[in-house]
Image (cartoon, rainbow, N blue to C red):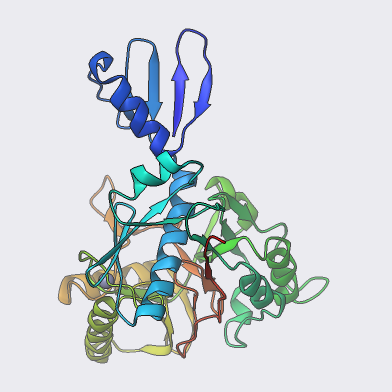
Length: 360
Ligand SMILES: [Zn+2]
């Protein structure tokens, strides 16, 4: 959160506690605002909400902390508004705890766990080392290796920034996998999610700006997720059982549904690492198909079996159905750091060494 003073153009970074205190102190001077980025404003000051970068990082920390608490207590944990609930017990995460006043403010909502180092209360330490280790020995499944060519690859980092492939993952001067590994190692301990594009591009590096030229050849894969429900109950596996039960039911429905589609076959089912599964398929024995066929397949499934696959189709100006050409999918064998779960065929969670450090 930051406070911008319009007179001096000064900027102050605020912790959650400082922001709340400032709002209280300026209660009488607050003026109404429609700006959704703002927590409050006065004649001279603008108080901004937590930005996306900080929010993403916090979500990762909180979901991993939830899994750790679930492991320690044997009970699932829900997360809402920075409060983690396990049975009757409530924990409040704090962005920082620098003073007894700051601790007291957070503790109104539950037992405080700081997400940054402090001596005043327990703090959570996120293990990034095991992710690093994983990517140091990373390899693609053999069946996926032929499909890196002409595809766009991007990496979401813990600081919420995106990093992109540094070169093409083709087989000139080395294997495509070795090039991908090289890029992945560059950011290994910071990668929270790693993606590839379903579509092929003539110049995939340009997809960084969304301006790469489509080759209209698609990798045939579908996303099957547990229905959005609230609140998710995080287990020690890093996943929500309710979501996985729903997703499993949908996966069965998908198997049934595609019996009627000649040529479409499931090749691999992978855990998506969050709420469900990624189903990698083939059409007439090929894992890639043309954009038209891929869009038709998606429309057929959505129209005849609504609620199985996630919809990435939309109607253009002429009323024709199009598929989202920028659609990205998680790289097989990569890790989703929100849960620590691998995007792989058998369920596997990294042996993360997240910990709670108690005050001395
Ligand atoms: Zn859920």
